Image (cartoon, rainbow, N blue to C red; front, top):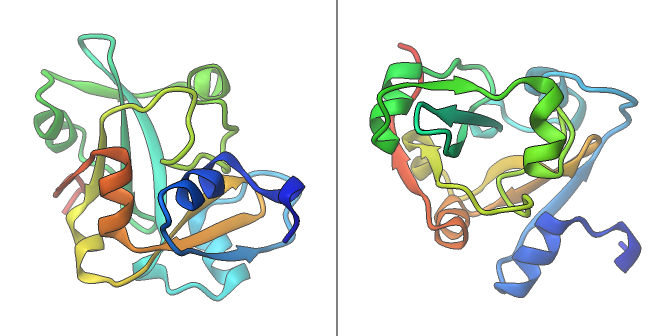
Length: 159
């Protein structure tokens, strides 16, 4: 893969010496994570989506959760010490993160926001996350990902 094809997420992994694999898939517009996993053959339980939320304090937070699950807003707020959090509106994703819906990676946003990775990621050697654009997924060691983003593990999904 040539240098011109690298995303910010890949550049950050390279800078930190973290190995990753690239999976590309044909896609013209946003599709959900389950569809992406089916296109790439990635195991659903190891595939994670990136959600950006805003707390009552107006601070932004990043939550990386399994693609088949929904975030528990109360648990997410507790994990980051907020009274409440709400999803960032789709129209604001690019302005806040520099990414588009469906191509949002926890790595390489305009600013590094506090990041929470669902605790189930810790049970895998590699997880699948967005590579920073639609049609691109990357696999990465979840512990290495957390170290780079200075994140934490927490249970933030609905049960």
